[in-house]
Image (cartoon, rainbow, N blue to C red; front, side, top):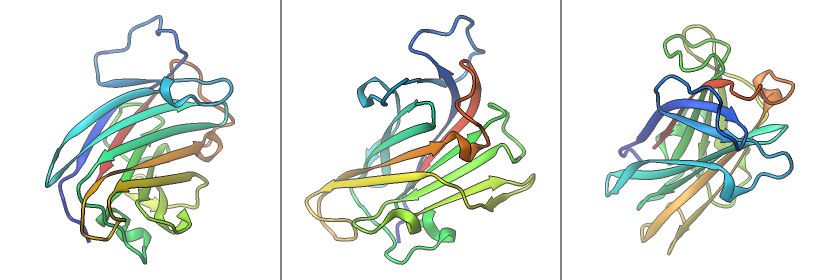
Length: 202
């Protein structure tokens, strides 16, 4: 089991076209998620980064974009030690190498967890099907409640040896594809919509 330093960031997610917003938003950390009318282009997605690489801390760079049907995140993590649970349970996913994405459709409001608050966990794994290594939660006013939710995660690792084997590891990535229908929407929100966004890697 891995208990090591984490990387976390809270910011605003702004749904935007490739052009700049006409009206500046209030000063805050924000990322403008670009829209792709056809297929998402990795090298044209928005990117930001956080953390640092030490024996006890991780660095991550994050890419974000969206298409008509889904919101997409890709989190690339520099990590010297890769560990995952070969018999996972939702309650302990974040005890291992995991990425958690927090979304709040109300914007950068903080405070109370409501039905507009979402938490998605994705734990690193090697070759196994992903369904047991991901979990979804929704706010109920006071806490997170596990919910059945359709979303996709995929991941891979880089190193001289696979995860759970002592040796030289270089890092891993976790990607999330989150259908707007799973977030209670029939399609993407209007351009300029602001959501709250946070990341946590362990």
